[in-house]
Image 1: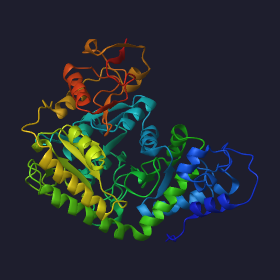
Image 2 (image 1 turned 180 degrees about the vertical axis):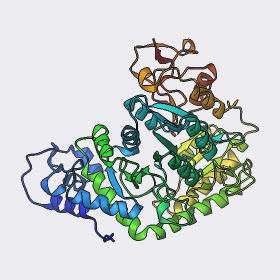
Image 3 (image 1 turned 90 degrees about the horizontal axis):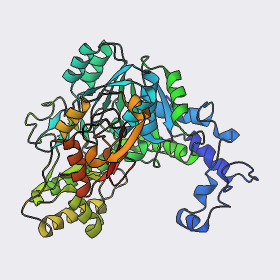
Image 4 (image 1 turned 60 degrees about the vertical axis):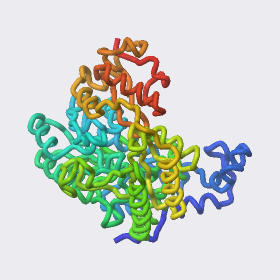
Length: 495
């Protein structure tokens, strides 16, 4: 057992920031002396004194033998991994590295169609061929959940030469599928289960939260420590257990997708966040769950509003009644506002501008909030009051939205790949007006953001329903990312 009270990397950074010396190394601001005053006024000088490079006492992220190695070992023990890598390019680089380490050009990988855009980037970089599975779908709420064990088993029977299975756990809405069953099926084929657990870094620290991916049997999982815990933005971790993953390939892949000038501020924040959770995680998560449950209970009682829960209308079987929705992260709050005659985008804008309540993201019918260890009782009070006033003063007769079935769109797109994502991405392309792109092959990653789930990806046939969906999302206040033309007036297609 390691001493989880220790913070070797944080301590080393603190000591080097305070050490009197004359710096003739990067970064150019020289511990804040060259920082422009308006920025120093905003952030203070202390942060710049600690913005250091790979000095002798600070170790090297790509060949750790000192304090980074010690900090990663402490994290591995805290999260239940056999080996952990610190990430400074977010979970994005972790997902990319996971695919690069397990798949080469032409290799098959099984994954859900509602993956994050980082997985598509991993396909482009590796040259892997996606075998897309349709996630289970709630037609009442128009929300895609997890892929099911049966879908994974069927895919592996049809593609026994697949090199890996990748899944999302939890989804952006906090929904967890039957990961243990998926792991068991995947391992019967002696291939690894890779998990995008970007939003589940807190699961290991409280029994009332869903089972962590590692505890459920995942071979590799990527977690955004910054999304729900106390690390700085971009600070993430990649964990591995067992012998199905070649750790040397992970290290080499990370060298391809991470900066060679990693921020020690981000690295030290990972060390500190790990210690915080190792020592106080259960207490912090108990308090967070209490706040979340208070918000869930009070908001669900407001006329015209409902919240996503395990007993949603489509899942009367309750816990375990649906293989694509066996658990819910109760700290993730999704409120359906269509009963007020408002779209999620409209309600999100009102809450933000009128009540200073800012959500994580909005969709056509819903608004989703992340309740974390950084929230307070005052935050919950303001959230509930905002929704109470919204329901009283902004209600409309009906919601004027023709909502295309997102699942049908993803299903259609997932089976319309004419080129691999890599082939289409590097193919000769041309830019056309949106109206002229129907039935052409897409050369871009197009996704409403957040949550960053691509509706179109390189290699897929562009269809009119998809174009209509994207235009509707944009018209209602959503943001379309990935495309070269952010106004969505043109798209790049394979020539």
